[in-house]
Image (cartoon, rainbow, N blue to C red; front, side, top):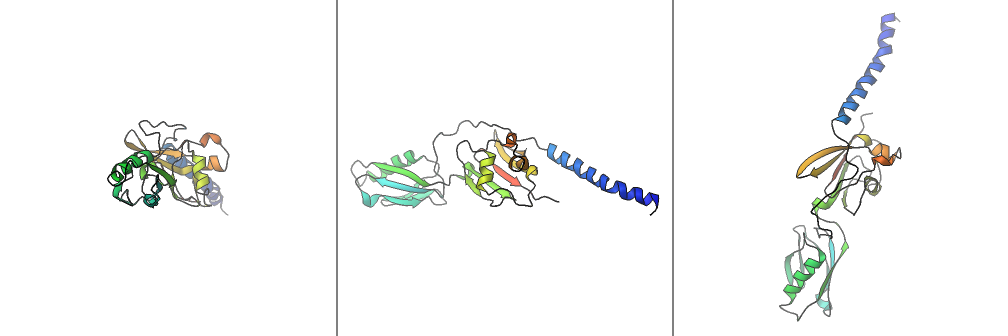
Length: 211
């Protein structure tokens, strides 16, 4: 082989690797790292009912009026003597008081308790995971939920995932922003500093690796 050819084949792989490394670095730096802790103000400290939630409605002393129902996609419910009542966006206590007002037309001093037996939550309170997760899905947000909790819930990454290129889409002060998250470092490397706090409404996008 000619010396020029040997030189070409020697530098070509290194040149290619350098280009890939620079591209990865540029791509990663284009998005800031997700903040380790984020505080959301103005939210209710109580659970708010959403479409798909299963409710247990108990009317004291009136078993025939008690029921177990699922909130419809339009956010409303229908139960004995209660038609098309808005449930989504209310706390269980608020909904119970509204049902009491309606039942007072038929029952003397009704006492109602509403319990959420299956949680789904409103869309803006869910965490959605798309892309190369083992089981991509929408998760109900739970208090103090972290990135690690989310990854456990979706079964981790697929073998084709590029975890450190994942993107977190979050609404901050009314504006949609994108952050870089380091899922590989967290899940495979055990780097706890990559374990960020998740917030209701977050969208986690996990791309496929090109290699």
